[in-house]
Length: 482
Image (tube, rainbow, N blue to C red; front, side, top):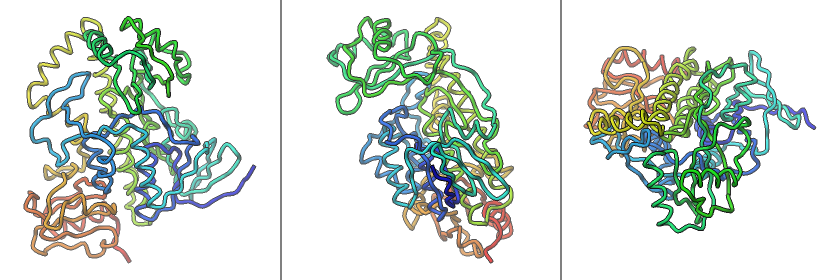
């Protein structure tokens, strides 16, 4: 038993993709950060199955995309909405119009290596049991009695977040009405038999899949028989076999499961993402069905938004309202994901009404505008934050432009702001050069005289006026350096 108090700038509870991404973002700005992960070993469960286009961009902005492509395949399926797939729409607004089929253990392995490379401290087997915050910081207590001190605490500790509960933040939403079991295991049936059975079941039930995974395993997804009273209890192999026989007439000879899990269609969102010096990110802030494969991506993008802002506060240059923009920007994005996953669960239904609706929606997605809208929503390349009136680019993320100095994302690996300037020297970032880079004569692809990008790649200002630029720099990057 220990009551030692260590000093950190930020403590992150949870070492999944969200926590690891956030920790690495903080370290890019020399923030002292420690990740406390309950599990003693990395997870082998692959609930998240890949990165959508916006997360691909995020990885490219931090120089991580090659590491993902070395281990995972690209995919390019438009829609991915309610079991409906269509060809990718033409000219999607991204230089990376693809996803990466990266199983969650692979994603965590790459993000963990990145976090360690930039100096993140990761402590496994550490469970947060309490915290107290005051005007200067947060004291966090662990299960073994250890106490740690930091200026900020972030709960990235999943849908049953201890940090959220201890902070007294409500988690309103809708309870689960259906439940699905999933897992990875071996089977004795041959691939041709499996494919034929799945095709037949999928005529009426889209929440059913038996597909090859890694290392000779098969990934099984099958509707459960009702909603379990104890949602924390793993399903058994016998339960899995029973439901496979109920839908397919065979259990395919499944055996030797590596892991089993369950998920429901509950949708809940934290009433607020901040309580003083405590923040929520990822599943701690929002839960929803995995339809469309958005959950892991949403959490990583939460971290990408919060990281540079929290670092700015630690390093003393954050404008007064900067930390509050995390919630005002990300809460609506999370709410939209909850809404679209509810819609997808309806489309995945097996009743006649859902089948008819799916047939209509399938035809609608043949229209380019509909396909583009759905694909932009699922992949998050259409996310635009509300920065007020202004240029059409304002608030949106900037695609990876070809510059005379290389590519835009190649210049963003350090997580600093960036002024792309085509005004022949009329603009300057003097006074902010410690946090904003200046690229002159940037690119003919830039359809604007100058653009100021935040560290997360979103457009903070468009124009040519030095006075207006100064106002934007003060708004997002604080006062000039002394």
